[in-house]
Image: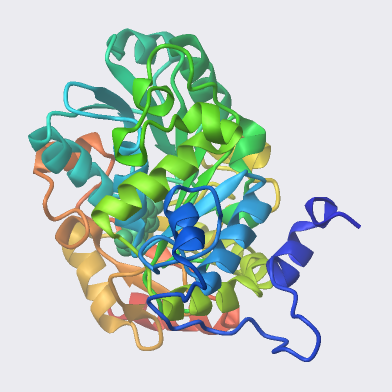
Length: 427
Ligand SMILES: *Cc1c(COP(=O)(O)O)cnc(C)c1O
């Protein structure tokens, strides 16, 4: 059976490593910066991108290559590039199509780190981020676009609001403007949402979250859907000769894989945001149980959300799996298998009560992380979104009492018991 026909569970476990006779059954870690060649001529052809073999780990490594191919397979893309962190993936993906004088359209409910890099560092580099509320109608988004706008950006599930992206609306905007649609699919993972099937052109992940799944390895990945026509006059850097490769053209020489090839051979070569093969090995290992973990994350999260909704100590809870959520319909449409383990809620009594609740937890930990096996909490206003002004916080929908909860894969009853005892201490 063609591996592209496998179900996602089989892809997660088996993709993309198969040993030669009598070789290690488990993908080995090739912890080598460099690779030996027989002749100068052969190595020269690797440098000219005529031969696709590794020569230096900043550009490609056999262990990382297996993980990248697995990600491309699971997402249904034409290629992937692993990075040292999720932020590196976000930065590299945007830089791959934008230069000084360009602008991007981005949802304002994205991860705080992405919001900050877009509105500060990119601004310093002469790239303007036009941030907008992702729930506004299509014509209002279109009205914000400029002739220099080069992409539209959103998160399948926003971090931390877990608001569901309206793929159809974003795709329609992208089509009308002739620009690619970038999706950060970190919270959904390809198990819950295969974004290319809903019109995305480039998918980004922080693999530090559910893909690794155990909170051991920082990483990111950019996946190319191979489904955007770069030769539409707006993206000369994809079409015109790259002098740093003797005049090669990415769209002409690499066709559907133009975006991801340029990201690797030009930007990864120049910036070196390369992951360690050890980290991609760990992330690949985590991926093997992605489908099993995601099922339990979603199942537990729904139970906890329902518990919170019925608790008289909880002021409000927002989880797209709850029928009361304004994102319920979008969640059923784009994430029918489940809506991840992330949700937000507030404790009655405001900012102070929420702080007391967090301090009283015994098993559930306060950490700057989400989306791993262990249930954890965080107060975004005082941590991840600390760099944002009060005005920006409100614009991003973050209230001072908000607790971001990431439900793990423990027994849900034990999580509820910890919450109950912590609520008691807030009375
Ligand atoms: C965590 C996160 C990032 C940044 O990833 P790092 O691996 O921490 O650099 C980007 N996007 C989303 C949605 C995230 O949750």
